[in-house]
Image 1: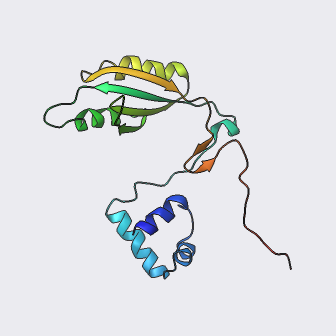
Image 2: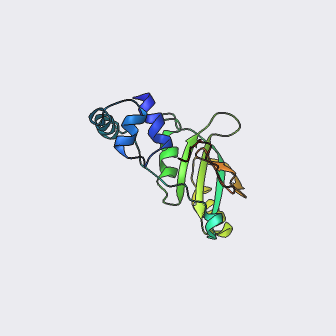
Length: 159
């Protein structure tokens, strides 16, 4: 299963038959792996990596470091879950190191994100402090380079 999950993570749109060939399995075995992975919740979704800058679309992203007070009964889970419930939030990650939670948010402007932090995130009882860093440029995301064309390193022969 691990080999299958790692492969489709990098090739989510590859047809089932091609995945089967690449993993040296039958299409039936591969279909069963897809079914099992979906049924058990291993696959949480498929997404496209969009280069909004290249498309000329204004989009602002920020990473917000949070120091929070964990609750005795559930630790960081309750506060992490309540922050994750905000529709503006793309992801919430429990971290080790200098802060507790890392929140990734996307918006249409710097002001929109700043207002979210000031009016919705900072006032939460468990939030002690926030530190917001705005994304300036993406060089690589999801294992794919941004801002440059990826070259195809495969060799081919013209007959």
